[in-house]
Length: 84
Image (cartoon, rainbow, N blue to C red):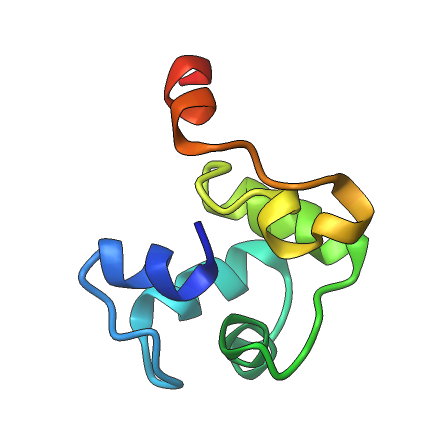
């Protein structure tokens, strides 16, 4: 799941003023604007930030979702459901 879909799944807007993104940003230790730019595809997360974002979202947004070239391709939805 990408960050925008994550925010929308929690009734957020995935826009700059989205409170869901603000909460994730605070938990991940980055600015709200940085997380918004990552969500919109204007900026890439570093591997360290990707790990923190995954943790902040309860791994609903995985490191593979954020950086598939670093962490490998995301698992399909069936695999994620089995792991939960």
